[in-house]
Every structure is written in C-alpha cells, then in structure tokens.
Image 1 (spheres, rainbow, N blue to C red):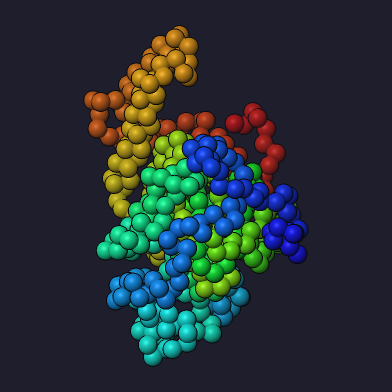
Image 2 (image 1 turned 135 degrees about the vertical axis):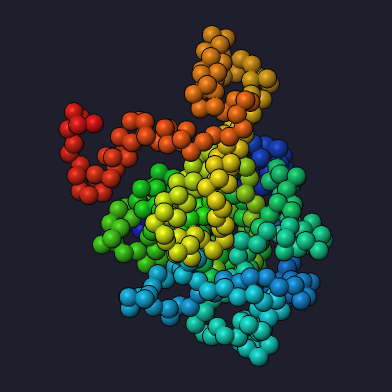
Length: 412
Ligand SMILES: O=C(O)CCC(=O)C(=O)O
C-alpha cells in the first residue's frame, strides 16, 4: 500500500519520512541536517547536477576498459544445509568478479558472449552490483565525473565526488540491513529506483545486531528483513520501519545510527556521501576496541577469515589494532584539548576544569596515554575490560542468553 506521497506504508509504519525542500540558504540546511534525528526526502533535488543525466551506458562509455569488482548473488542459491538461503544476501554469501562496465552492460542485456567473466553468472538467476565504490578511486582518471557531484545545495560545498561513493546495480541487487556507526548520510538517486527500509536507532535490540561478519563501522542485523524468520527473531515483528522508494533526482537524508536495508527496483545508479559528526571521535575508539576484541577472539578460535570478515574489510595484526586504538584515543584527546582552547568555559565551570585536569593527569598515570608513552598496552586493555563495571553487565548478558534472568544482586 502506498500513501499519496508515494511512500510505502507498512504494518509497523510509525510516521512518514518527511518531505523537505532544499532551502535557499544552504548554511541553514547544513546546520539542520547535522542536528536532525529523523530521515527526510528531498524530491527532485539534484535535477541541476551534471550527473543527473548519467546512465549505465554513459558511464561504461566514459570508463572504457577500466575494470572493477562486481558482487553477484543468485536468487536460486540454497544454503549448504538445504534450507533456503536469505533472500537479502549477506556479502559473505555473494560471489565476486572483475569486469568492465561495458561487460556489465552486455551482461544486463543478456549478451553473454560480450560480458567477459560475468558470462559465468546466469542472467536470469543472478543480480550484479558494483557497490560501495569510492568515486575518488573509480573515477581517479576522470575528474569531470567527480566534479559532476556537488553537495553544495545541502550546505556541504566542500563535498564533491571526491568525498562520495557510487553504487551501480542490476534490478534486485541489495545491501543487507545494517547500521553505520559513523556520521550521517546523504544519498542521491541518479538512475532507476531504489527501495530503502529504515529503522530508528531505538529499534536496535529488535534487529538482533551482530558484528559477524566483521566490517569496521558496520553493525549487521541477523534478520533478513525482507523475509524474517520470526521463530528465531520474534521481537523483529514489533520493530517499526519506514519505507521509501527513491526516484531519479531524489535525495534521502539518513540520520546517525539509523538501520537500513537497500534494494534496487530497476537497474540503478546512486551516489552518497557520509558526513562526519563530532561524535565520530568517540565512536572511533569504540570501533577500535571492537576490532581488537573481534580479531583476537576469532583468530584464537582459528576461524577461517572468509567466514567472519566481510569481503570489503581487511584484518591486520594485534599490534596494528592496538596502534589504531591508541590513535583513536589520541584523536579524542586532541579534539577535547582544542575545545578547551577555543571555549575554555564551554563545558565546565572553572572548578570542574581544574578537576578535569587533575583527572586527566591521573588517567595518564594509570593508562599511560600521556606524551611520555607512545602506545597503550594489551595489559592496559585487559585491566579496563576486567573491571567489574565491564565484566558484571557482560556476565548478566551472557546469563540471560542462557535463559537465566533472575540473579540475586548479592552474587554480583
Ligand atoms: O545503496 C545501497 O545498496 C547501500 C547504501 C548504504 O548502505 C549507505 O549509503 O549507507
């Protein structure tokens, strides 16, 4: 069912995705978007962008013999145990092939002889997606293509194709339901239509989050939102969702930490830009911690990387992860220090500032992230993780996973 704005109304539809207009004052729009916590659609907002005229054929002609990696998935694929596979494929369920966009067009048109290595994927069964391509890389030698994108009318004139990602796929290509932990997102639909199913951050528990497969800054849902197994994920039935069909020319604003499942309804081209937020610094520490823990445990388990690392992710050594963690901590420290210089009275009274300085010195002594140390150690991390503030809620969570929810306070 669709309402008269063209938005799909679903069973758990709570409120419509608001329709907004690009303001005459982009600076105001920028500050509005940076604070906004609800999605919004701007219809026909990119009709004056040069890329609004792009078609897959045009890009194929521009890019010539340039090769890229495509992600493919067969709708007829069966899981190894014989049960039917997720309809919304996880990336770890997909196959990959390198081809030119010219070969992709031939494949789309069913001309298998001219579709290079894509010929091994039967057109009637597979969808094919050149997804998550940094325009700075894909269009490295094509500056005019990068300049065809400009987010200035949304208040971000510093963002062009150089800070954007492009997604080009055949009908039914999809990205599994996930939440990005950094920033907020602007998505421009250039060619064809795309369906977005969005869930607010408050619904996170009903989406059964998982960090496996692991990808930095992506939290996946265990639920196939297009075909949910409610016997396994009963709370999903209560999750409120918003559905939006983006038409060519539309721009969607995705606020911080909103979950989304995305599916092409036609052959589609879209471009997006993730906009950094102030909270990303802390998020980076959280992500660095998660990376360190996931890698340590999965490597110790001896699991095959293909089974737990998302194909777009690369895993380094423990030492590398610890260095990354240290850098993330240092970035927060520097941001906070800058805030203190710019707005000495902004976050605290004078007394609090003295106390904060004292606490900082104490933290530096305890955890060693002052100038005198150039890293934090695995032992520092273990000592943080094993404090009762961390280990007690973890114990309670694990017990509740085993069905034990009544625990006497006395035992903790
Ligand atoms: O368009 C897609 O397939 C996915 C886009 C996405 O996940 C994003 O922009 O965050």
